[in-house]
Image (cartoon, rainbow over all chains, first blue to last red):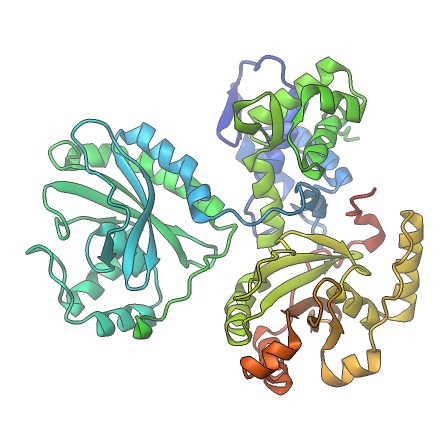
Length: 280
Length: 265
């Protein structure tokens, strides 16, 4: 049987990696599954998830519990992340900013698509690009970085807008009305914008309609904290004749997988986002 | 009988060594500091690097903690939902007072800082998120100590003696005043004219389990130029405590003596 244990970005499938401690690799892999877990995990669930025997899982859990990296939960039915992980700090570290968190994932999205990938945050009533990886050749540029785009125009903007609260969306529409039109497809009607917000929330991403720029295909994904507040939006953009609907359909599952991994990390940090559109 | 993976333990010695040093470490440093054979240290680093728990510092031959180690540590912090619930209130408190506000929770005989919201004039950035301090080190922990029953304080003293670092003196906070006002204040050691304010929050069983702190950098300036008023601050703290409700404590079922977070260990 081929056994697979995923550890971070690495995975070992059958063949042994040279010069690594196999038992250690398994223990670290099990510990890694507790990252971002908000409820205790049982042995059966863990062994099933990692495709290892219960005995093997027990041995690793026993080691990690003895060391304090895991603890038995209060009911004694499962395992929870332990206090000893707090020792993994040089002491004076600050929370990483959203660019640092997202950067490796932007690069992975670029390697997957070979198209321009960018990261945007909310500034006032606008979206602002703060990082990105620009594709080679004929491409969509993510610069100028200092361009402020209203939150109703373009998929990155609409992604950010959609994951605000209903009150905040209402406040944006009230404060921003009449909403600025950039192209004939820019959504300026409040009812249609609300319809779009609900679609993005349901689908989990926003697509472009040439509503800010024409001739390019954009798709935007939210980067959220554990409570669902947006840290940022990640977008992939390319000339429309290259990022065709058929190619996008092919790429989408892999893009969503990377975005889900990014969100797993982003969930660990609170989004420092205070919105007051009435003052904007 | 389940036999644990004892051969994996040295990996955590390497990991914690990387965690407690301020500078990147090379193979020779690690081998020497942990008294490990070269081959073992090399294999350990390769295992940790492959799993993302250690990483090379700027593509050199020296190592620092990797992203997985940092995410793991952050996972403990993000388990406390009170962090996200408290954040908007702490931000508001920080904006209205202009001072740094923070939230810490008790873990065993220690306090863990969950949130820091910097005040407009605070450039010191002393208390990073994730900082762990023993209960007698800092006002938040001392407030918790003051509220503990006598027998628990005796246990804390015994724990400190056992770890070879006796209790710092003086740590006492005026208990009667704390219970009457609901918060404690004391001058800040590092800032002349500065004052720390700490208010306890309780778990569902009414055990003191978390502390909201405000670090007023200059009490005189705050009162005269920002219109600061102790009564306003007190009202804001009481409102915060009421809004947050009981605070969860994930490790309350563990014997505090077994939670060994002392760096000097």
